[in-house]
Each structure stands twice: as C-alpha cells, then as structure tokens.
Length: 340
Ligand code: ADP
Ligand code: MN
Ligand code: MN
Ligand code: MN
Ligand code: MN
Image 1: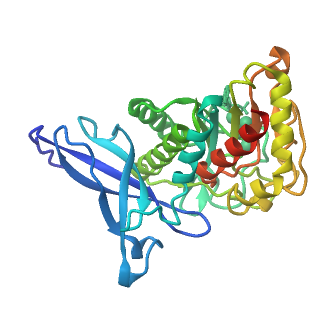
Image 2: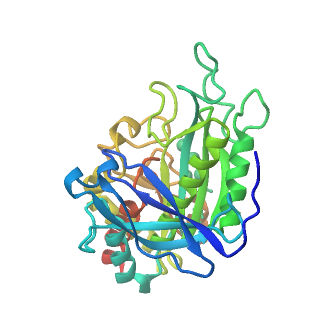
C-alpha cells in the first residue's frame, strides 16, 4: 500500500457515539478532518441509519465530550467520544451519558470511583476463537489466566489492544484470559463515573477496531454460548471516600443496593436472566445477597477489604453488554444518596 506523507497542518478526529440499536446499542464512528490546533466542533449524522431518527427528519447532532490521542492513526490524530443531541440541542433519548454526568456532578463531593472489568468473547466466524471446527473444546478448568497454545487464543490481538489503551492515555489496570476459551477481560479504573464510562467506550471501540485488523470479531454478548460455559460480565467495583475509610460504609452500600435490586437488574444489560442463573460464579437475578469473598453473591466484598477494614465493593451483576453510563449512574445515585 502506498503511504502518503501529509503536511502536519491538519489532523483526523474520529467521532465515536453510541447508537439507538435495541436491545443493545452499537458503537458508530466517522472521521472529520480538522485544522491543526482546532478543537473538535459540533457535527451531525444521519440518525435514520442508526435507529436514532425517522427518515423524514433524520439529522442528529454529535457533541464532543471526551477527547484522547488516537493510538491507531498516531501523530496529532484524536479519538472523540460524543453525546447525541437532537437538532434542538436537547438530550437525545438514546443519550444516557447526560444523566450520568448530572449524577456525577451532584455527588462529586463523595468522590465516587469505579473500576470496570470488561469481559468479551473473540469470534472467528461463528465460533469462539480457538474452538474446534466441529464440537467443543475440553470443559472449563484450564483456561482462566492460562498460558500456552493448547489453552489460549488471541493473545497477540489482546496485547495490541492493551498497548493501544495505554497509548490513548486510558486508566486501564489489567487484562486476563477468562474461564471460557476465547473469552478475555480488561479492566478500566478506578476513576470517576463519567470518566470510567467514556474510557470504556473508547476501549471497546479500540477493541472492535483492532480485532478488524485480525479478521476477528468481538462479542459483548452476556451468554455467547449456551450450556456449561461462563457468560460474560462487567463486574463493577465501586467506592466512595467514606467507603475507602470504613468497612461499615461498604456494608451500608451493599444494603442500599439491595433495596433497588430489581431496578438495577432491569438496567444492567440485555439477556441478564440468561447469565445470572446462580451457576458459573453468579447469583440468580431473582435473589440479592452480598458477602465477603463470595463469587456466588450479587455483591462481593473482597477479602482484602475485610482485612483492611475499608475499601470497595464489587457488583458482579452487570452484563458485558451493559451501558456503563446507566450502571455507574444507578450505583452512584443509589449509594451516595443513602450513605452520605
Ligand atoms: P477480580 O478479582 O474481581 O477479577 P480485577 O483485578 O479484575 O478483580 O478488578 C478489580 C478492579 O477494581 C480494578 O479495575 C481496579 O481498578 C478496581 N478497584 C480497585 N480499588 C478500587 C476502589 N477503591 N474503588 C473502585 N474500584 C477499585
Ligand atoms: Mn477480573
Ligand atoms: Mn472476569
Ligand atoms: Mn467471569
Ligand atoms: Mn471480578
């Protein structure tokens, strides 16, 4: 391929937004060429092609809200997360970030922090990466945090994605191979509710984009393979200033979450009933319980937190396909309005 040397007077801004696809929105993006030093301005798109507007009134507005370095294009190029507005500059119904921003602002004095564990499954055509053409791999057991070609697939892609996240300046905190072969996890955080959500959107987009280069697709489905195979979640670790000082406050946070369990389950991602069965390290969606070290609970209090007498809690319920703006908004509002 010919590589053209362009003068460094203009740069590429990749505008990324969440669309209106039901029940799980997709990420969309397109490129705008901007002058050197120019801030990304408002832009528009065809909402009739993204389930966000009817054809006879199709324009929607992209409002840049989070900008970082583009590690794929390099140079001065940028990735730009956008909120979707209507042409009247109102919050579009598909835009869940605006409410998250308001809640983050309202409770900013409590300094809420989130760490999200994004699980996902790599697919080679219609089977998970590394699975045999016929039948199934051996049962779960050796794959979690494994090493060696007999147990792990996709590491080159996964490492590239981690490097891209770091180069973009995201607050990633780790990666690991998961319990089901072909399934992986990366973690973002701990940072505030809005930051962690914006960064998760960038990290998901980078994963989709880098997987393209490998001819592999990424599934965020919460139960990508039926049967005796783990689903994919987005464990949501959470703390406030008070929780980082007191074990009792961590317990109070669990109690507060218990009072809103049904609301939260309804907003933690499509198909959550298929994943939260009570098996495969989950608690049934019909139940709510919390406990120290309990991976069969809705909320786990890590043993280290018990040991230290302070720290954070892990809401194990959100799906891999969850909307991070909804999840962090609900947890922040539920806990911060209660524990003060
Ligand atoms: P697990 O043992 O559940 O697999 P991980 O190491 O994958 O745990 O993820 C733990 C997450 O918790 C990380 O994203 C980390 O940044 C986050 N975390 C650590 N301390 C806090 C805290 N005080 N508040 C919120 N999140 C935290
Ligand atoms: Mn983890
Ligand atoms: Mn995991
Ligand atoms: Mn898991
Ligand atoms: Mn976890």
